Amino acid sequence: MKIIIRPEVRKDSGIVAPERTLEILCGDRRFTAAAANAEKAAMRGMDSEFDIGRVHLRTAGAIAHGHEGTISHVVRKEGITDVTVRGHDDCGFCGLVNGVVNDGMQVSDSVMEIVYPYSKLAFRNREELEMQLAQFNAEYLGYLLPGVMVTSEVIHTDSVYKSEYHGEKYLIVMESVGQFAAYSDILRAAMAPLEGTYMVHGRFSETLPHIEIFVKGLGVGNVVFAAFNNAEVGRMGADIAVLNRERFIEESGARVSLAKVHRS
Ligand SMILES: [Zn+2]
Image (cartoon, rainbow, N blue to C red; front, side):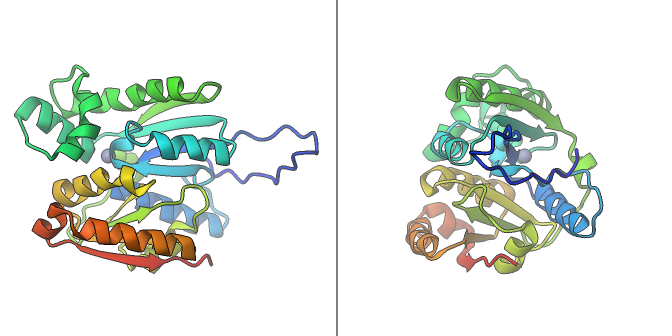
C-alpha cells in the first residue's frame, strides 16, 4: 500500500479522472492508530504501509448491510469508481456474530438486524467468518452499486498495527464521509487516545446499532460525536439526546459528548 496524492481533476480538461476509491474499513482501533501514524509519516515525506489517500468509511466489521444510504450517497457525491471492503482477523464484530450464531449470545433487536445477514453464512468459529465477511459484503455492494468496481481484502491486523491497549476506549462517531480532517486533528478535538479509539461513519440511524456494539461488546466508555460544521453540530446535538435515552448507554455508564473538529 502506498500513499496516493491525487491531482486536481478539472471536469472540462479532458483529462481522464483518476480512480476514486472508497475504502470500507472496520472501525477497529488499530486502524485508527495506523492511519494517524501514516498521516504523520506522510507529513515528513515518508512512505507508509497504510493508504491514507482513500476515502474511508468505517463500520463495525467493515459491514455494508444497514449502511446502504450512506454508501450510495458517498459513491455519488465523491465520484467513487472503486470500492474496497477491508475486513481483518481478530475482529470484534466477527466475534459478536459468531457468539450469536454458534453460542446463543443474546443481543438487542437493533443489533440483531445488522447481525442477521451474516447469520446465513456457513462458519464454525470467528476465524472462518473473518475469511468470508469482507467478500460477502463486496458481493452485496456489487449488486447495490452497478458500474462500480468492488473488491475485498482480509488484513492481518498485526501487520497494520500491533498493540496491546489497556486504557479507556473511545468511539468517534462521524456523519461525514470523505470531507473530514486528518485523523490526528479528529483525535485531538475528541481528546481521544491514538491507540484506543474506534470509529464509525454514517447517518445516525445507521450508526446507532454500531454504537451499541462498540459500547456493549467492546467496552467503549466514551462516545464522541465529531462535527465539522454548524449544521452537523445541530443534528448531532439531537442525535446525542436520542442516544442518551438508549438503555445500553444508561446501563453501561458510557459518556456521550460532542466535539467540533477544525482542520489544521
Ligand atoms: Zn473488526
